[in-house]
Image 1 (cartoon, rainbow, N blue to C red):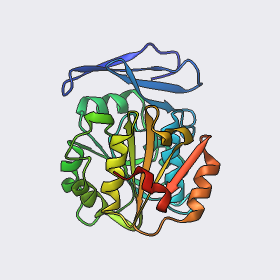
Image 2 (cartoon, rainbow, N blue to C red):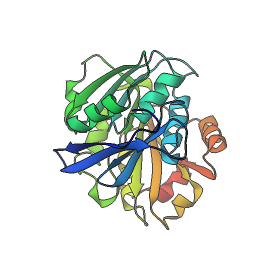
Image 3 (cartoon, helix red, strand yellow):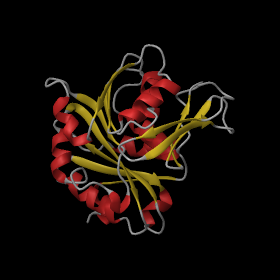
Image 4 (cartoon, rainbow, N blue to C red):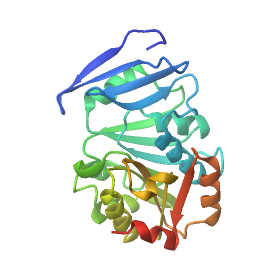
Length: 261
């Protein structure tokens, strides 16, 4: 797809909805993926390092800290969307090996057809449920980054929003690996609190990263949870807070207790 092209659409048999990709009128080289009329992803083909959605930018900043800058990593994306983060990792860490799991075959085919990946991207795709797909990965493969971007609010699948799933996902991490979970939630942050508690039972340490006002629990939005296999570095808190998007806040250690279920 090129800038100025008319919208393209594809029927998704699994959900019975239509996916649409159309140029973004506000950014040069930008495209928006919508499903069922709701915006899902934004891609900047001209500059994959420029991430439009704030919560995805926060995940990108977390990935930046997972390994020395520019060093190739192994990454697993559970929930592919328009592959915004896969493009970001390829742009910032050329040579990285990535896997993406997507439930909708038609969606993944549609995205790759309309918005091709940058040349040189090493991306393997798996069609299926995020938890079931873990068993299909090469047995000896370990990931520096595992990103879960699937569920939000009360519609979160119970077989994913639980300690047992996080145990299975964390078993795939390298020693320096991080498990990053995007949690979209409603006021009160019921899902966020339950996922903080579940992750704390599995990972050595856990931190939450979001727009500062999200932690009041007064309105809906996204909070990024990160589980680590080592104690959470204080310098990561400083780096994430400085990088934003602003105003940014990180809760770790005893400060995170307020989000425990």
